[in-house]
Length: 163
Image (tube, rainbow, N blue to C red; front, side, top):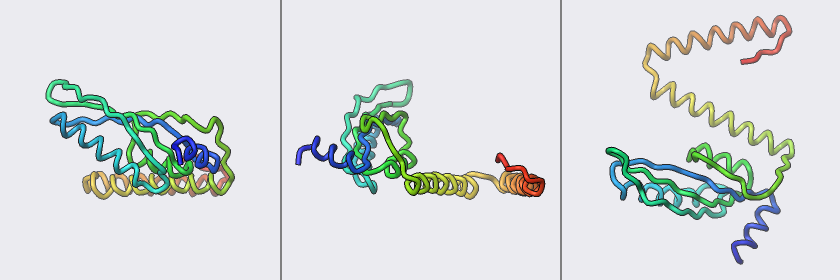
């Protein structure tokens, strides 16, 4: 099956064809290029990714570091899969090539929002456990208690919370 036929079939069933842009920095041009090659290979293994192909720029030297970028064409089976890829790989840019318009059913939107929420919670947990000092964790916990008290008061008064 030709690539255009694959694109048409997947997009017809809710897929998205995108260009993603990534950058990489390192101590040698080989490390930078190999890291981008490895990243593109890993992208192809992500759940919901039909294919990913990329072009890698020659690394340039700036002071002590080398930098390069990659343009990756990726076909995702659905919006949720694409969002997961964005969370995991953090592209510096993304351009949706097709479709021209996206329509979400309510269950799809719920799944997407839950995915965003779960990823945010995992990131917060990582920062809390791995990056905060004990003093910072104590201060964070105090702020959480204060927020909970404020939310409780607002709910009791019948006003929606904004945080």
